[in-house]
Length: 77
Image (cartoon, rainbow, N blue to C red; front, side, top):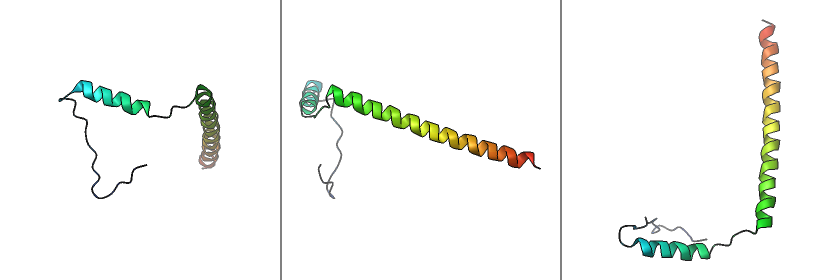
């Protein structure tokens, strides 16, 4: 990963000069990417779905408990 020093500056792509050159550079950079295998994508997708479901159940449970607690407190007034 590159170090971001004092002189580092993000640059914008210059589409106006040569769109063909820009697209060629994009293709070159994308060929350098280490893409995950199909098996990795499927496994990690299942992990994301499972964790999302668990967090949803946890937050839903907390919501239910707090709603009931507030209901009990307010009904005793």
